[in-house]
Figure 1 (cartoon, rainbow, N blue to C red):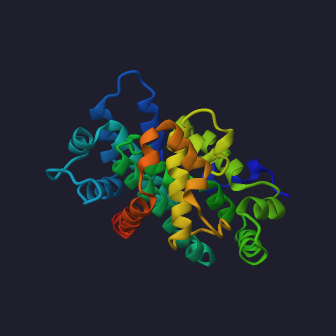
Figure 2 (figure 1 turned 180 degrees about the vertical axis):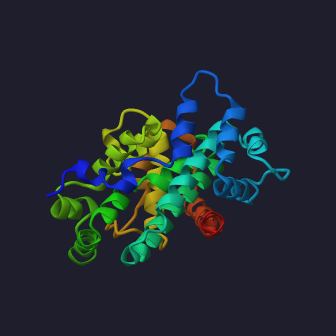
Length: 290
């Protein structure tokens, strides 16, 4: 059986992209220097191009076009922009590998993760609950532990998928059988290693066992609901979900408790509108893959 630490000793997961590491360090300071952040991002020309594409896309509906990272920060805010930076950087680093055997699997993984990010973002927008783009980034990274398992031993992860699809195990159960651990524990160690903000660490570690969480519950609940919806809308990544009754989900109950107005939501209409937005994920992928 593999230990959690084995998964994060591979070269791919040892470090974050350098720009992200430096940005996280800048954000730890009491007063964030916007010019320092924008200057740092602009040292990476491909990343800058992708960020400007994303910022100027219909996903953010800015009133005027932005032509520099500094402008993007002024329009979107430092927190939203840096969360987009982290997401796009990690996505770009891990989307394609030299191992052609796992590229199809990675495409499915990132399709699911991007869909969860988009649905989380849409859900937050429609309900007026804003988490400074952490909900989008959390959606992108919630299953990062699965990515590490795939990179570590793709054949073993294919066995996990077989157990889920053919023997009706949950993803956690199948991972424990094959690897002796599960993706939320592996993901949690990666999040710690990368020194990601606590909100992201909570999403990665607790999205499938939200009842154990004592902070950031609403944020994690948004991402978990998006995760479940992506599974049933054709953007699944082998969780083993057979049936979804949204109103019975712990994550939905958390939101109803925290936000009483959620009890008045017409779930059928709400999910129909979200599903329409979910289809825009293709736009995001085109922007960051090219």
